[in-house]
Image (cartoon, rainbow, N blue to C red):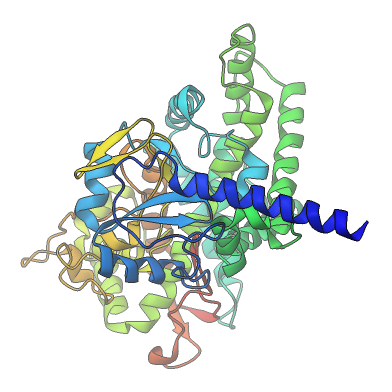
Length: 492
């Protein structure tokens, strides 16, 4: 019996080795250079799961701005710097528009939802989602009013701290989530709502778990680790908990749906499902409804709230910058009216500061993986259809050829010699090309209105000297998770 078991194990390992060798040596086209992979583990010896981005940057220094690595048996072409990222995502937009693999979340999404779908399904879902978001006010005056109203609720919540130390994580998450909730669920939640608090806890925890070294290791070696219990199970359970919450909302909406008066994104999707129920090629299914809503809710909450948390600590570390923002707010807006989006064009310094917060926080440093949709000739290399691509947004946001001070916090990166706001093509925190973030316009509006409303009324008070404030991410992997800290907010 023992001999038979040993032989079966050897046979299994041999088959895995054969698969690995075929995967790493398959139709490689004329791939960019890169380190030689080992069977099964690929380039794990060159890429540290706890320092994935830094490992890739070291390989860039050896192989140049375009190179190939193997994450287990999966080949990935890595793009570094503004020029390479732009050339791929903008100048070859169609070829690089595929969504690559992110094994840690595949058990949940399985190619469904607007973020993780491909082909015709993705095109239908993206076109529909953009239309509905705009119909519900994204980028328009109607959503501006909702953000302004929510900013006042947040302001009162911050005043209720009465100048005592507090962690800003959940106050910010509750406020930001309520804006996207008003679109996808048709209403906001009270800040003390137990269901909302549980949902935000799951979201915050899953965002952090996705960025741990274990999650990076799993993404690099899914073939070996998929049958081993580990934190990837926790990620699935957290995402599944959020999906179940959305499923309950979908069922409630379906029971009270009025086709003549859709209340929110879910209603609009349900109506589209009914409209296309006889179309076998339709992307409008209950599963895609639940997972697209999860995509919108997750991205619409974590990106803005995390950026604001980074913003507070960066401003406290640079009190001179904070003072200039206060001065511009007082001069342009004053203390007696709420900020509006129109104010931004008259506030170049504040606008530059917000851009610099986004650049330095570098929230999704390696981007969500892409894949090429067909055999693609790129910079003299031939990338076979299905090759995954990592366009490293971090390398564009810190490109020394595009920014005067690429490695320090400096609003002057977005100001000309006359102090006017200056756009920069390398500013790509929302990515670019056909997979650019759906909610970019909404996020830009939220960042400006929430930040100016808070700083118009309150003063940020650190609990330690500025130089001692934390400035390194809590986790750095899929995302750069803001460090944990407390602060006081005092009336101005």
